[in-house]
Length: 113
Image (tube, rainbow, N blue to C red):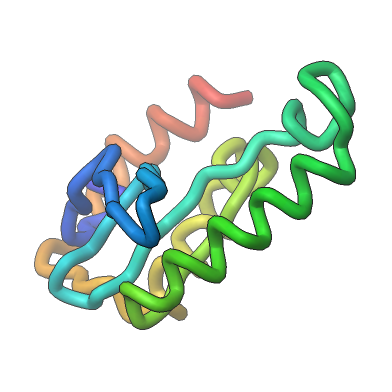
């Protein structure tokens, strides 16, 4: 996000909703937007019933969307390729106060491959 020039979000913000604490990965207060970096582990069944994990995630998301305007999600493939993540952030209209740093982005791309 930083190397691409985007406004940096607050990280690990907790919302208290209906007596539940829901922590989000990223929160852009200026856009009233949460961002979630999703892994597949909780849906693979290694930590319990995947159907229950999906239902719990849907309830969590419904609570959060009563407090914020919107949310965006991405997974590991978008992080490894970078351009899809940049497109997600741009489409969500995350402020981009600085130009992208092509040298730092190139070094990050090299490190990911």
